[in-house]
Amino acid sequence: ERGVVFNSDDDGATWTSLRTETTRTLTSVAFADDKTGVIAGHGGALFRTEDGGATWNVVKIDALGSDSLLNVAAMGGQVFAAVGSFGKFFVSIDGGRNWAQKTAVDADFDRHIFALIPAGDYWFLAGETGNISRTRDQGQTWDKLPSPYNGSFFGAVRAKDGALLAYGMRGNIWY
Figure 1 (cartoon, rainbow, N blue to C red):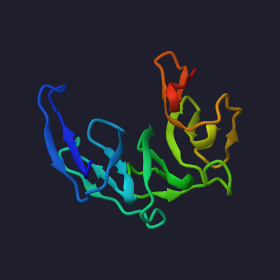
Figure 2: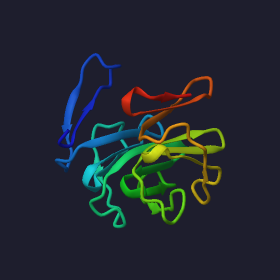
Figure 3: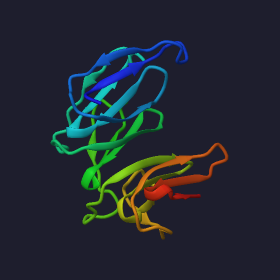
């Protein structure tokens, strides 16, 4: 809440709080390696670190404006992807320094996207109105998958065995 980040460099035994340059809610954090990370949040909040989270610097995406980013994910190497309100979808190939807006699902897609996860050669997204979609070409084209659920998916994770789980309203979890 209010742009505060908590950092631990001793496996969670002690924590240090850091204030970023926003008072907005931060929603997601991802690291490409032990030093390079990105935090995303409401009101267009986006920050990156090159020192393992000891300091965070603002990153501006003009096309984002004040819309919210709801999830950021490390997609492999120095590639990050961020998704959010009204179908917002951005990709960085340089460790979060620069971001390009991409089309999520299709040109008319305007649903909130709450999760984006890498799974082998695919990226999967999950969001409002039961949307589950996948891309095999880093978001150039998307396949909208049949969904067992019409409510909002608020997140998704990939299990150690490779299985995908999406979870949403009213305790729904889909495997």
